Amino acid sequence: MRAKVSVIVPVYNAEPYLRRCLDSLARQSYADLEIVLVDDGSPDNCGAICDEYARLDARFLSLHQNNAGVAAARNFGLSAATGAFVLFVDSDDYLELHAISSAVAAAETSAADLVIFGYTRISAGESEKFLPPAAVGRREDFERELLLGSLRTFCNSVCCKLFSRDVIVKSGAVFPDVKYAEDYVFSITVLEAVEKLCFLEDSLYFYNNTNPMSTMAGYSDCFYDDEVMCAEIGQSYIRKHIDPDYSWRESGLVEWILSFCARAKIPLSEKRRKLKLIMRENRGCKCFQKGAARSLRTKFFHFCIRHCLVSKYIFCRAVYTRMRSIFLRARTR
Image (cartoon, rainbow, N blue to C red; front, top):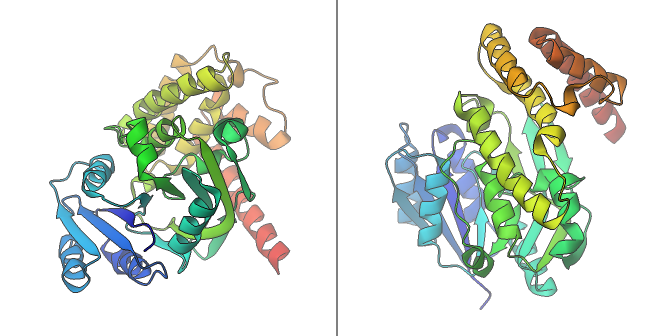
């Protein structure tokens, strides 16, 4: 008998997408599954759908809690999980048919504590794949690329990973009680206990970027504070294992602000107000000084940030994103 895999699915406001997600789990080619559904007090029919799947398929376990956020839901699911491996799936996303089978085979063949695989991000009318290069090695061989380099996108989410349950227990990792960036904190906490990593150059996870109810689709006033707290945890790890002089404000603040300007679903006047407060707090950062940006595009974006020109940045970013999308589609034909 192969090792049992616990799939943990936090569920909230995902009724239009939930059946697709759960069907993708029920149809997995890997048989020995424990699928832990945690209804986080969802106000729609998600709780009833979870109960329905648990009633019809013994591999599903339906748990319910008062609304406490995705971090608490995942922690609840972890406490109920009994599998040798753990996989996280968000309730508006779904898996490729052989995803779990491929990930477990890689873990068993390589004796890795952690398997990281590629994903496909689905936006309105288009999709884009993010694939790590196939590789196996010690944690130390990949730390810099995962935290600071080309593999950083795979450190920001727990949903493109198969975890050994033993390494989660060894690390003592739990999801922090924040609304944003909880995946990053959990990932780097586990990473510190990992001895061996395996990367699969396959897209096994489909990330739905079209759900308007998703936490990642909006913004709240705790967004910046949560990001700062999580970034400082990451900074401690990087200073300990990679670069003792690393400063997240110099390396990651601009990227965060660009994301905030583009994604926050709040009025422009509120964006300007918040951006001015952030700029005032970080006025001395070298990343905002003239000459810090290299490409012409980045220089323009930095100029918009320094002068709080949010609307101009959003317009130019939309044009750039559209042109990049057209180019990518043309290149794949």
